[in-house]
Image (cartoon, rainbow, N blue to C red; front, side):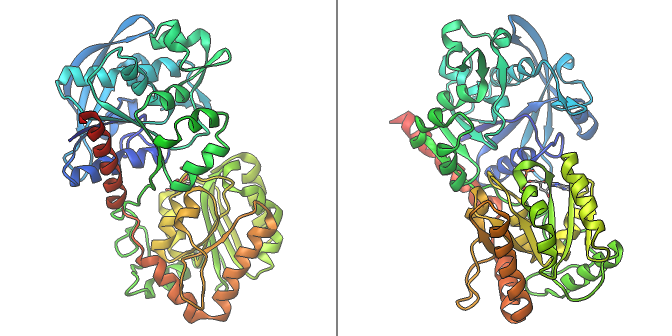
Length: 476
Ligand code: ADP
């Protein structure tokens, strides 16, 4: 089976968020299952700096009524033979940013991602590589299923569209829609009021829709950021599949960022990581549970609850360390709040891969009180690193973290449902209580989490089954 994976980001070449990790990890895992996979992404300026590329094809791509020249370059996903094709058109992609600069989006995003979507189809023709399935991701590539559905162009492939975060939909004023190159009748598939919404078009046109956790798949039918009616009309074709973890990167037994290696079978090194982190950050070594957070400082992630509850959290007798950047309001709040607890709380306002790994390794408890969370990765990293997750039961958090029952020795963390500071404090309180009162039960809880398997292999198998089902429909 041949699967073409089209995405606006792919790690390690061009990464802004989790999408880049999925666009690299899933095709690699599919290839291990025998799928002939290829990835298509834009050739941004950063890509040229990060990869060894060779020229693969030249062709043109129609955008806004003009034939734009495209040079496709070929690279390979690290640790695999999976080809990545980077579509080059310097006026669109040879820029310092990926989506924009200085907090703003590039004004020609519609033309840039029309080029990517149509260019992926043109690439298949140019290489005479006929995919059985084209797997598009988020609004940037939502036009791929639209073009194929309308029979405009491209190979006779089945299409899958994965929604990684419904909060981003690709809205553009209708007067820019000529970039897409569809007639007025077809454009209606995308229209909402006097705007076009690329995700809306993709949702209606794709043969199959997926999102990144089973719970989020259910939640977006209720609260679908304005697209709930469009999603409900496709609910029988919408499947939630959890993202996986790349355990070659997130494994405390072989993590170059840590001070000491450890594992479920040999957990002693975790204590050493905690000791070193405390020493480095000037936190006192007093046996209290260390609570960590690593996150974009965004509304979605629940920092308003942390702000409301901060003093009551500290009154539970915890230590607190947070790593994050984002909304200046939350940056300022965290800085001010931790300053009131010298030796017991610390905020690292930065983006740091190194400290992300170290905090996971040092923390006893990992807090993720998200308002919504399509999948979430950090709770899964936390499980492997022995940091017990305390999470709001929403989206992928609900699917991966289950309330601990210390008597029956079940569950892997602590959860709360209401989006309130009180509910969060109660869950955190249960975790702190068990940590202090029953160290043996706590150790067993940590071990259960560390032994769980959230690798990509299982998720890739689910995607493969979905593709097979789609192709079966085609042949019957
Ligand atoms: P989202 O994609 O909504 O930001 P996820 O939990 O799915 O949330 O993925 C976030 C990823 O970004 C994780 O790998 C997390 O460790 C990482 N991350 C977020 N903030 C930082 C930071 N300040 N420093 C390092 N890594 C970060």
